[in-house]
Structure formats: structure tokens, C-alpha cells
Amino acid sequence: MAVDILKISKDAREAAKIYPDVINASIGMFYDEDKAIGGMPTVSNAIKNLLDDEILPYPAVDGGALFKKNLLSWVFGPYEDLMKQSYHMNACATPGGSGAIASTFSVFTKPGEHIFVSDIRWQYERFADRAKLSCFEHELFDGDGFNLASFKQRLDELCEKQHRVIVIVNDPCHNPTGFTLSEKEFIAIIDILNAKVNNEIVFLYDMAYLEFSHEANNRKKISLLPRFLDHVLTVIAFSGSKTFGVYGLRLGAAIYLGRDEKRIQSIHMAFVNEARGSWSATPTASIELFNKFSVEENRQAFHKDLDKINTLVQKRSQSFITQAKQIGLKTHPFRSGFYTVVLTKDPEQDYLKLAEHRIFAVPMNGGVRFALCSLSLKEIDGLPQKIKTILNL
Ligand SMILES: Cc1ncc(COP(=O)(O)O)c(C=O)c1O
Image (cartoon, rainbow, N blue to C red; front, side, top):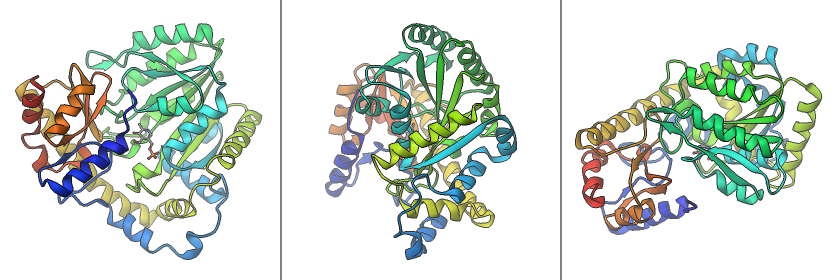
């Protein structure tokens, strides 16, 4: 379902200029309780204090040695040593997690091929269209859990007809549902991919919402990646734009992990080439901002801001889900994150009906997605009931 989320969000902002009661739940940007963007003062201040030298020059296409060193430490956290012992690795800065996804498609596929995705998902088809690929779906849920049977069966089918397969897993805080895989589910996915020994698997691990998970240890699953056998290559898509709430300042990276050093070298060249031949280089300001927050003292200050946001977003989600449960409004299984999906029969019509009542949300496969990260607790109070009444659910 290829709707333009940025357009829905713009319509909502236009409507808000006329009507005071607009609810804009269309887009995954954090707004505070007073509807101001920029919930992380440490980040806003760091941007304002960037020097000309940290903004104006061209950066290294891959972000440079310091950026890559900081990136690996940031993403792997306490598992950095384990990962470095287990894998050869390299990385390339990208304009957002989006750049990491687009370039992975470009580096590892040929036009006409399929990518392996869940039936409920973020807009991977946009990147697929550009690379002339199609989506091959498995069912995401089986009751309240991940549908391992469908994942396995559909992957078997695709692996029969295509040798190299990109398998996308968006975790934690899956967009649009807010679902997060358990460790057990993650290991089962690894086992299924490990069994495809006659294929080449690229495990594209989209961790855009890594910092927004409410798991006891949000990096634990990273420590399980070394269980992959040699035919599985991992590409982690990291989003600095989400992590730091700098949505318009494009920041992300692709990190590739494999056991064959030469292959990682050639993959790195392919990513750098792809970057140079499309967006050229990630903004210097983004790279420098990331390097600033990799300094321990700044990182701690950032985490204080982040904790506040995470507590608030979880409070909003809990309020929505509790109210929804009380009135029998059905959602997909939710654990944590920016979004939740209300199940509806005709999402393409339903989101338009909601928009008529000045509630802006996004149609998805099976329902309508609400970005709770951008709503205040006051706006969420009573919202499930309004949705139920408007959509006659
Ligand atoms: C699941 C998922 N992956 C990746 C991204 C890419 O984020 P960005 O390109 O802003 O870093 C998003 C953004 O909404 C997302 O929801």
C-alpha cells in the first residue's frame, strides 16, 4: 500500500493551521507534551554549537575512520569485542537508515529479484521499486508472537527460485506494530536462515528504533548474530536520524559483518561506490554530531534526554493500549516503540474517514497506524473511543 506518509503529515499540519483539534498521528517524529519537536536539548544544543569546519567541508564518503570506530562501539555496546572476534566488518555512512536499506538493495540484488519481507511492514517496497525488485511476503504474526512457520515456509519457497535472498527483519520496535522479537524468536529465525546452506542469505537487520526498545537489554540480540553460519551475511541498518531525533538531518549507516575478509572489503567498495554514485556523501554535520555524542560525557547527557523520551512514549503507548483493550478496539501485538496499528477492515477508506474528523493516521496492510510518539497524553485520552466510533468498529 504505497501511500505518501510525508504528504499525510503535511495535510495534517495544514489542517492544524485552521483547526485547533487536529490529531496528527501520521509520522514517526517525537513531539513533547507541548507539541514541540526537539525533545533532546543536548542534541539541539550540539547542533547549534557545530563549527563551520564541522559543517562545511566534504566528509569521507564512508564517514571516515573515527565515525566508523564510534559507530561500531555505539551499535555493539558491550558486545563490541565479541563481534570483532567473530566477524570481519566495515561500514558506510548513509543519509539515514533509508540510505542503508537502499544501498543494500543496490549492492546485493539484480533487477527482477525478490526481497523477503513480512506482510505488515514499513515501506520497503519504495526502495524495492527503485531497485526494480518485488516483495516476497511471509506472515508476521501467529497470535501474539512471530509467525515462524510462515517465515520458514515462505523462505523455503523463495530460496527454491532465487539463490541470493535479502531477508529483512525490523526489530526492535517494529514499524508499524511496535512488536519486538523475543530472544527465543530471534534464535529461531537464525536457525531457519542457517538451514538454507545452499543459498546466500543477506540478513538485513533494520534497527532504526534500537534505542527506543524497552527490553531489559536492547543489545542482547546483537550478541546472538555470531551464531550465523558462513552463508549468512549481516547488514545492520542504523538510523542516527531516529536515534538523535534529527529527522531532517540525515544520518545513518550500513554495517556489514561476514567471515570472509576479502568479501567484506569488496562489499565495502560496492557500498562506497553506491554512495558516491547516488547521494555522494552523508552530511558532514551529521557525522560530526555522531562523533560528538560518542564522547562518553556527551553520550551520558544524551542518554538522560533519551530516557525521558522513552518513558513518555511508553506511557503514551500504554495509555492507548489500555483504553483500546477496555473498549475492545483491536491492535496488533504491541511491546514498545513509536507506533501501534488499529486493526480495521478497509484501511484505505478508514484513514480517509478519520482524516474527515481531523485524525491523521496512515493506512497499512490490515489496519491504520498511529504514531503515538507524536501525540500528547491529552490527545491520546479518549482517542481509541473516537476511532472506534468514527470507524464503527
Ligand atoms: C522501520 C524503519 N526503518 C528505517 C527507517 C529509516 O529512517 P531514517 O531514514 O529516517 O533514518 C524508518 C523511518 O521511519 C523506519 O521506520
